[in-house]
Image 1 (cartoon, one colour):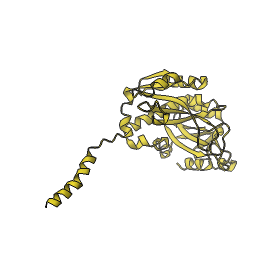
Image 2: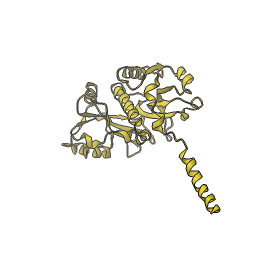
Image 3: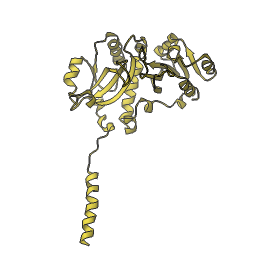
Image 4: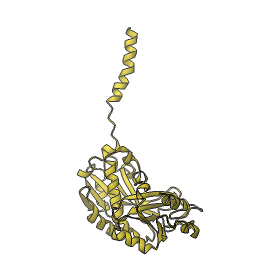
Length: 280
């Protein structure tokens, strides 16, 4: 009996110790977001900073915010009192140099002063090419800011959303059956031929000039999804292309995918993207 009791204790002690362990999930770490100040870091790039400032002033509602410089960010990033929304340069493993500007929302805290990799990444959204941006980022910046805020809101509710990326948290295309889908000609990859475009007839998917697509986004057209593709100006093999369909009226993200640029997969919406969208 004594030996049995010893064995029983040996089995249950680890279980008790395990039950007392404190596991802090990403959802829990984000619960303080509405009370914390979000520092919007201005990079010094007048074109990006200008559109970012305007979009924040007009759209940001989720937390208190303040604008700050890169120098101030460096002095504050180790403090847990702040979140930081900042423009970063994205460079992927096979790229020879950074090709994209991204908007990244991160949380300050212990160890962040040693390395940016130590900061809790909330969400990162592609914005535009570093070299020769098209100017469309100015039109789409308000929508990108709302996409970031929506991601934070759903991440505070469920760990599934907190750990999932934008693709996980985008609206299912099945919900877009009654919506008009407009894709800019500039967002179409070279692999999409005239026959593929002709096959879209009657599907509710329209290929239009860039100016028309951007005008719909800028006017907040109701029940209309507008395309936005982000890729380096001189896209090389190994670079990534990001493709989005955004509701012009609500700024909800309905489609978010990326692909690695290769010989048979140029920048923009690929034939398989169009097939997937047309089947909605």
